[in-house]
Image: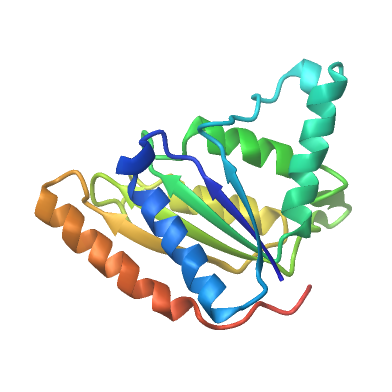
Length: 195
């Protein structure tokens, strides 16, 4: 079984999502000996944003790196994403990664009946950190966006481990992290059947 672990927070060791994504991965390692884990830090090694030059594959090295990024996603059975809420959505570094894995003909296609996702059979676990309280509020463009983009790619098994209100006070942060860590134990079920 292969797990792809992504972090996108710019906060380094102070990051709530880095702490939570690492805890999720450690939990999976404990439950599944032999789990193959690949790690990618989208803040320390950002993927170039998609441009017309990227689409034209004008830079051979960039095109090769984009193909490796896509293949890494396709090969993964589980993807654990550290995704802080930045300005009500996701960091631009995570969006740049999404732009490299949402590839027509590879992870989705258009048919006469509409779009069809081609990357099913995976499980996505998002470690979400938010300074305020946004779940279910009109200010939450993060979770609906991530659910939609992965569903578009054919991945409907998307779960969130959330720590909200972490900027309110040290106590709020501590309580939110404790609750999020406790919720990780609920991730023990297996992978979905391939679509």
